[in-house]
Amino acid sequence: MSGRVILLDPLWPMDGVEDALAGLDVEVEKADSAAGDDVVAVLAAPEQEVRADVLGRCPNLRLAGTCSTGYDNLDVDALSAAGVACLHVGGYCDEEVAEHAIALATGLLRGTHRLDRHVRDGGWWPYPMEPRRVRGSLLGIVGFGAIGRLVAALALANGMRVQAADAFVVDAEVRAHGAEPVALDTLLGTSDVVTLHAPLLEGTRHLIDADALARMRPDAYLVNCARAGLVDHAALGAALAARTIAGAALDVLPVEPPPPGETALGWPNLVLQPHAAWYSPEASLAPYRRQIDDLARFLRGERPQGLIREVTR
Amino acid sequence: MRVVCIDDTWPLDRANAIIGPAGAEVVFSREIAGDDVVGVLTYPGGPIDATVLERAPNLQVVATCSTGHDHLDAAGLAARGVWCCRVTHFCDDEVADHTIGLAIACLRGIVMLDRLVRDGTWWPYPQPPRPVTGSVLGVIGFGAIGRGVVARGAALGMEVLVASEHATPDEVAAAGGRLVGRDELLGTSDVVCLMTSVTDATRGMLDAAALARMRPDAYLVNTARAALVDHDALGAALLGGRIAGAALDALPVEPAPPDAPERDWPRTILQPHAAWYSAESDRRSFDDAAEDVARVLRGERPVSFLRGPG
Image (cartoon, rainbow over all chains, first blue to last red; front, side, top):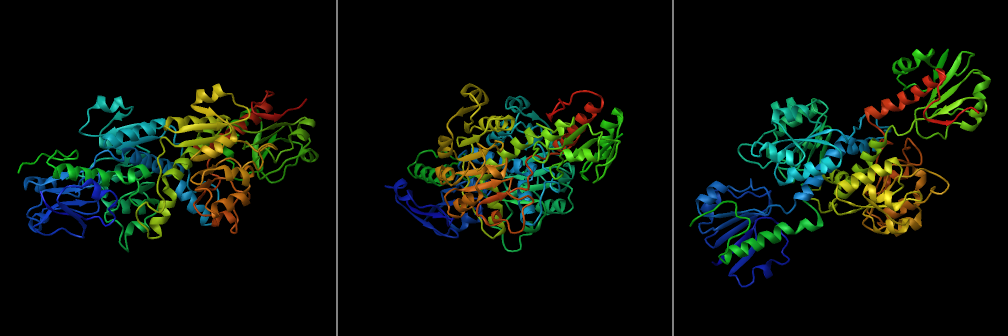
């Protein structure tokens, strides 16, 4: 196979790409969009989408990949049906995301961010923020896959009680990881902190909508280190403004980086993170390297490790 | 009989519920005076010494809603027959929770990253988060709170080092840590947590030389007392980029004045002496002190006294 490989992510690190693709008849270039008869592969980061329209612009496309665990940015149905192999990178940052979520959950319960701002605004003493005990508090994990299970382990280490809601995991599996299996509505109504670790699918889009937020305790916090599409952001902004929940920490926003005028910047009791949960020095290059290695496997006619769905062509 | 409470934030209804059955009424007053005053409830902002007996000659007990007792002349009061009480261990879990929370907040960069987003930056690269599991947590001091931090760090998969003059290697190992010398701890740790009280041996122990031993990518967490740290040296180390950052819940002057130099230090999390707080610990600090006053009035021995008569 010969042709061009388009990298949609302008930050894609190029170190090692040439070596990984040595001997293969492809040229790699960065571009805002993919177009041309000679484009055989397009690789994206979570902020770039690869939808069905790419098929019209790149009639000979064979592979579409995302250097992320979540692959909601790929139209896997349309691409796979057209014979395009869709790839993601699973598990490269599970520990990092779990640690970040626990850091944010702990920070919310202890009021760390708000207390820092309170001091810098001239205040003192913890009373306006009412830090809470971490030990003994109840963490609700929505989505009990690899990351959700690591979150449970870290929360138990901190002395938290843990419950989890996941329609696709049997109760015994949840209990085996030290968590109590519960229905989503129960989880929302009882948790001190609700943390989201579900993939973004049609069935999970706006999983946390106005009704779900209304079920949460007025002293509860929401953590989202997964995907912004899991949350109805207009409803979250309204809940924070009306103080029907105590606060939130978001590592993901509907548009990243946030455009000027992003309303979340003005919401009260909100901690914002720049899509950072995946990051550690060890994890920083892994998704790019693994994606390029998988591209090389595909071009050599081998089976890629991160293939999302079997395709025939 | 009256017990005078000089702290206007003290919940008097609960104090009366505890002390009332022992035969005294708790009243708020700035003045401690009268033959009927048998007890005093105070706080770190209300110093009490033996001269109080000139105005309240029948005083039996003074209790403070704090662990620290610099504001009480316990020896002088005890010499005049007055029990001097404080509260202990009412916030061990809270301080340990807050300390480990700040340690992982430093490693994951969550406070600096929030500031970056609000300053218009995106992506984690200016403040790259680091792994928690596998990093080295250094805990200086091995009292009740230090043990709680060691246990939490070990449970999170951190390698935990402990420096303490009083601990044995076996008891540190049992808690999940490894006893080392202070210099080794300072030179090895990703995060150094101060978990010791201020004594002549520990005052200013984190000075310029100690800070110089720390790794350039290491963080300092102080939820104990500001006097443990040479703040001039700490400011120089932060401004000079010689350590990665700091999280401080204790400052030399509290509340921090508008011109406190710590406000201008980079990569610094400031907390308003909050580590001790939860609704439960707040209640316990008042109720435990009131319980000891009630015990003295019933003719019993208080459980948490600094000095007693005789």
